[in-house]
Amino acid sequence: MLQVALFAGSWISEFWQAFCTKFAEAFKPGDIGAEISEGILQVQKYFDIGNFKVLITDAVIVTWIAVIASVIVFRLMVGKETIRPNTKQTILWMLVDLIISSAMGFGMNRKEAEEVAPMIMTFGIIITGCNCISYFKFAPPAKNVGFPVACAIVAIIYVIAISIKFVGLKGFWVSLTTPLKAMLPFKILDFITKPASLALRLFGNVFGSFVFMEFISITVPIILPGIVGLWFDITDGLLQAVIFSYLTMSYIGEIVEVGHEFEEHPEEFKKPKKKKETEEARAAA
Image 1 (cartoon, rainbow, N blue to C red):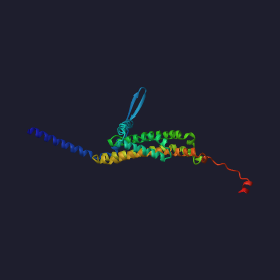
Image 2 (image 1 turned 90 degrees about the vertical axis):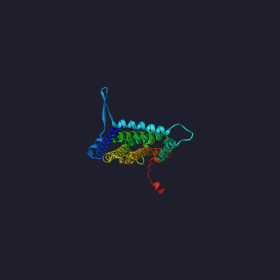
Image 3 (image 1 turned 180 degrees about the vertical axis):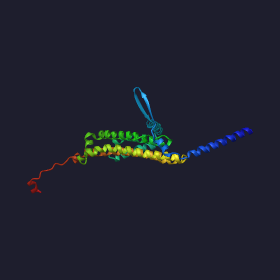
Image 4 (image 1 turned 90 degrees about the horizontal axis):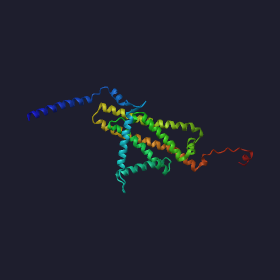
């Protein structure tokens, strides 16, 4: 019995010494720049498929993990069909109603808003999942500039396609030439600057938060990262998804609103013909 007690005491003493050593090493700053750079760098792996090399990065893998996790969470919230919706279903219903109301506020009618809502909600869910996954020590896909650029390109293509579906090619053309035809080059340029703005905003905010959280995790690895991460990983990630979805809706609304006005009052978009002034007209005036 005495030997067991001595062995246990010795083991506890060695464990405590090792724990204190590791704890102290965790707080040693070391080369912070090198450690942050290592965290920023992408993990790349090439796979040979026949004569082709396929590049897979950590952003691709984490994106699929986040998408699958987001779909599972969303499916759990939907649950089974019930006569009276439960709390989770009520929250989803309120969220969908908010998206539809916001879309209608941008000039869409109820039917158009309901058609747009699923895609807007998809953007929000996917980007939220991909941003918030960094709280669980996964590198967020948006730190790879390819992810926000891809999202922005898909968004602007969807904006153009759905707008043409709602107001037709003529209505879309009117939106490009209103209020002046001279605005056409600038409106076309707008379809380049808008996705660039969406991509850079998403990339800049997520990348900045990722670098800051890496710094916090290196300098103060205990407790503080979990607390600070509630804002920079969860809240900020959700906020960026909301902004991306909101701006996408507003871009559709800018086109659709002008298109609807053209359908209802086409005469207002016709350029009035200049009447030649004659001596009789001057005399009548």
